Image 1 (cartoon, rainbow, N blue to C red):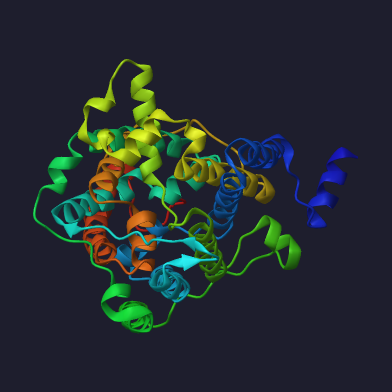
Image 2 (cartoon, one colour; image 1 turned 90 degrees about the vertical axis):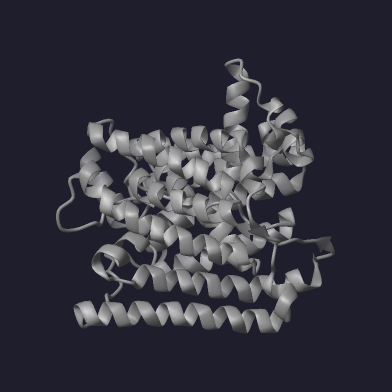
Length: 407
C-alpha cells in the first residue's frame, strides 16, 4: 500500500520532499526570519533571493560551463543564445536605473572594474577551471546544493584558490590596466542598451551560423513529461524561463543590496575565516587591509550580503533537487575526476579573485552594469574554456559527447 500511495502521489504531481527537502525548506524559512531579525529585513530578503536563484539555476539546469563546452565541442549554440537573452534582459533592466543612480530612493551602483592584465589572465585561468572543475561559480553552488558530491570537492578548492588569490591580489592590480569604463556613462542608458544589444545579436547570429553549418538545423528544447504546476515545482524548466528568472532576481538584488549579484568574494571571505581558525593571519595581506574587506573579515559571515546569498543558493538548489526527486548524493567518484575537481577548483578560485569576479560577478553582472571588464572577461574565459575542453578527455575519459551534468 505504501508503494502504491507513493506512485499515486508522484503521478498527481505532488512533490515528495523527503528529509533533504524539508531540511532545505526549514533552512530557508528559519534563515530568512533569523537574518531579518538580527541583521535587518534586507539581509533576510537577500537570503530568500539566493534561495530563489538556487531553485532557478537547478530547475532550468542553467549551466554556463556546459553551454560553452557544447558549443566548443559540438557546435551547438542553444545555451549561448539563451545567455544572450539573459544579458539583453539584464541591460534593459539595469542601464536606466544605473544611469539615474537610485532605485526606490536608494543609491545603486554597477559592478564596474578595471579592464587589464589581471582580468585577462584570471578569466583565462577561470575558463580552464570551469571545464576541469565541472562548473562555474553559480554552477558549483547549485550542483553542490543539489547533491553532487564531486562538486563539494570543487567548492572546497574553489574557496582555497580564492584565498590564495588574495595573497598577491595587489600585485595583479598593479599591472597594466584600463580604468573602470562603463558603457552607461559613455553612451547613456539608451545608447548603452542599443550598443549592447547589437553585440548580443551578433554573438547569437554567429552561433546560429556555426550550428547550421555543422548540423543543418538548430537544436530544439527537449520535451518535458511534466506540465503546468508540476513542472513549475519539480522542473525541468525551459532554459529561457531560467534566463528570465535570473535576470529578474539579479535586478531584485540590485534593488535591495544596492549592487548586482556576486558570488566569489564570499568564497575568499569564507576561506580567510577558515585560515584564521588554523592559525594563518590573512590580515597581513594588503587585500584584507582594504576598508570593505577588513570590515567583512572582522564581522560575522551572516553580515556579508554575498555569503548570505551563497548560502541561500545552496539551500534553494537542495530544495529544488528534492522536489525533482533527484537528491541522491554518491561518493563513488573516479580518482581522475577528483583530481580534476581539485585542480579546477583552485583555478576557479584564483582566477575569479584576480579578474574581479566570476561568470556571475564579472560576466553576468559586469555586462549588466555596462562594464568593459565584463566583455574582456568573457573573451578571455571563452578561450580558457577551449583549453579546458581539450584537457577534459584525460580527466574524464570522454570520447564522443561532452555533455555531462554540471554547471
